[in-house]
Image 1 (cartoon, rainbow, N blue to C red):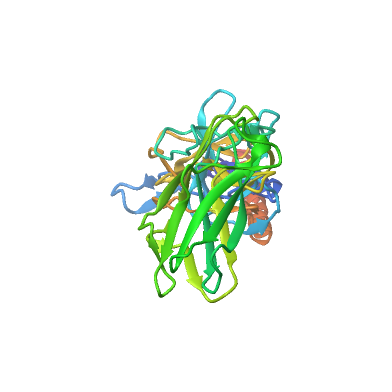
Image 2 (cartoon, one colour):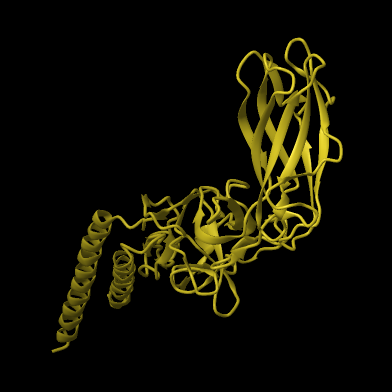
Length: 417
């Protein structure tokens, strides 16, 4: 009889703990990336009554329930935030807390601070790989993700150029055709080179010259084009209108020395072929350019950073160029249910947690990152309210058991009167 008190009390403690768990789940209904917890109950070893040991067994109640975090996929909602990210799969974002401890999270509502550090909503530093010497090396150790906020991107001097065009097969001897190509020097100053083709008397033969405005080079004269090639390039096309001379790869070096801008001398490789395919043709059509390309770029301000669906962060600049500047790291943990809640939407490794495997998204079972989205909490409000009702009834029944045991005790005491 007296065991009924402790048995009922164990049930009341267990159900009260269950109510606490349900309350925590409901409190985090709108917490991004939150994973709800379920309760695992177990009985306490039974007491055997009787000589044989098998006639009667009376349990001693229920133990304190174990909480098990449920790592099922949460709904993914588009947020529109440039730095927001959601995980589709079983991985985790890797972050460092204020104590420089490595913790894990599914909450991808990231933000940038004034120095360009990528942080969680509660200030933890997001881990990954950032651009070093123009390269994002995912084989290097992970570190803080720092983006080039407000940084002026230096110019890139032109080193290659190309022109795709058709030269009119019906052009008379001495006819010319010109097209401009804008290039950039080491200081970011643009220069317009002019590529001029002149029809020669020999059949299917042209000569090509590249010039720059005379005012832009020390050796030139203002108002007069300055030829950059000491000897024009002789271009010969076959009777089928296909370039034959120069032969592939057909590269010509175009030097531009003594720039008045003060920039370093330019040395541009002009390619007449694209992987052995001629860029020049000669057909009975008006001379016309179909494409012009060069690899230089002007100095530019950063205008926007955005994350794509692989966790790569791309910077967009005012000159229209885009560049990969960072990539998020992800962790795969074989037994995520062993992780311990560390607050601020973070989870830390517990005593039984397997070592995390850290790498890029979409490898090693780490899942996929969806940019501009947030993973919702996995809390099911209907299920939690159902559990709450069951736990409430359980607590009431256990309390009634205490009352009943008390009444039986009073009856027993009254027997001696």
